[in-house]
Length: 155
Image (cartoon, rainbow, N blue to C red; front, side, top):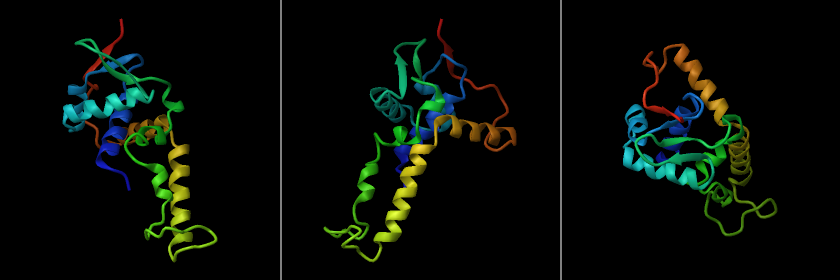
C-alpha cells in the first residue's frame, strides 16, 4: 500500500528516533545500517528536511536528526512527501463519478479501507513506531545486540 521510498523513509525515521538526543547521523552510516543505498536515502532525507520532519547539517560532523520530538511527528508526515495520500480518495474502479450518492460496487468497502488508512497515518507517531522497534530489539528480533553506530553528538 506504500512505495519502497516511503518504506525507506519510515525505517530511517525510526532509526533516527532511537539515537541519542541531539545526535546527527550520517547518511552513509544510516544507509549501511539499514541496507538502503545511501545516495537514494540522502534524497529521501532531504525531502523530509524540506517538509520540516528532519534537521540536517552538512559536513563530517553533520548528518540528519529529527526536527521535533518523536511524539509530535505523525506517520502521515513521513509518507506524504512520497505518496499521494489524497489520491486514495479516487474511485478504486476508475469511474469518474463515484461518491456516496452515485457509488460503484466497491465504493463502501474502499471508503472504509481508505478512511481507516488515513486515520492510522494521522494517529501513529514516530514515538509509537520507535517504541515498537525497541520492543522488537528487546526480544532479539532484528537487533544486532550492539551499540548503535553512526551518530554524531552536537557539540
